[in-house]
Image (cartoon, rainbow, N blue to C red; front, side):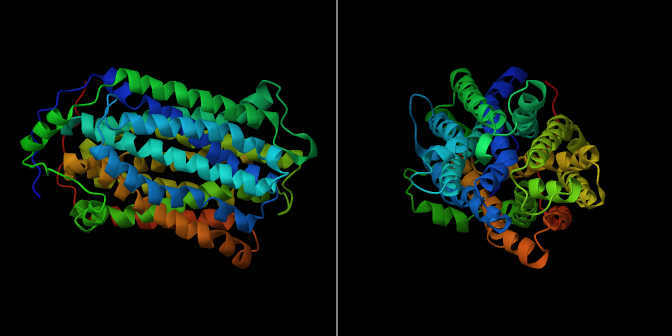
Length: 454
């Protein structure tokens, strides 16, 4: 299908683009709290290192099922709030509830072991994040003209970075700077973590409401006109079964991005799951079974800090991506960024000082900033507007499948082949990023619009 670069959508101001993705900042605030603390919470409740990746399967499994469905229905559901906003509003409310409940899983221990209650809340949280996140990607693609798409996704990544930095650092700040307890009695969850999750829930709701009240989506008639301008004729009726037809008919560029996404996200999943035990063992010198000591909590808090560092780097780097991509192309920009991430992860093996980990996270942040924006900037111009939601949802399958594979076998490999030494999971992640960096060079990215300064 031929897509023309001509587009009658109006140009957006910087503030309008900012407001468009403000809710995503709140979602990432909560997501960062989960990424940096879920493994610690589950290990505190008794999860073995081999089980960690199994519990983390909740995220990709729910994403693989939910996002295409949400994408399909958000393409064809029109309400007074629009078609994307109702979905991420409901998703944010449910995620906020899960954020409040997860660190308090021990309260429900009389019904089931706290470890399984916590895993259940993790699944609810992930399902809710997925309901909220997919429509945000589609919203940016819906609203912005083609020549602002790279800028739009870069600003979205910038806001994601702000939320992720604050969410990642909050437990450390509350425990080390504000004097809130870092170690709970009887091996429970420390107050600095619990209160951070409460704040995350509040921030998520506030930022989502910002986007809901400041962004007015295009009407069905306006969207139809934009489709005509791109040479696309609207279908009269869409059925749920069309999801499977759309999968088979996905654009060539989307298929070529599949291996890039696969190896990028299998790497990220390994990093998120195993960084806390890897740092505790390899850098802090703790034994495999030491998960309740004050030093282990310090290691967990420091992981939150370095995760905040890579998100902070991603936030700044995202603003540079449109300029870099204009100079050397989006494919090479993404390839070099992924390579920087690989170097960052591989370097952790040689580090024994926790502070030095900050330098490793600079490369990881460059990769993360590019992963959050470049694939979507490459993909969006290749998609029909009337199918934007469903294809963004289907594209998420390339993100969830590798995480499921890593979740099923990652913990087993670390325990059985590497003697429970989690540092080797990070080495594998670095190698996967190198493969992704090579794969992106074969992607067909024909639409290269110059960066437009607002």
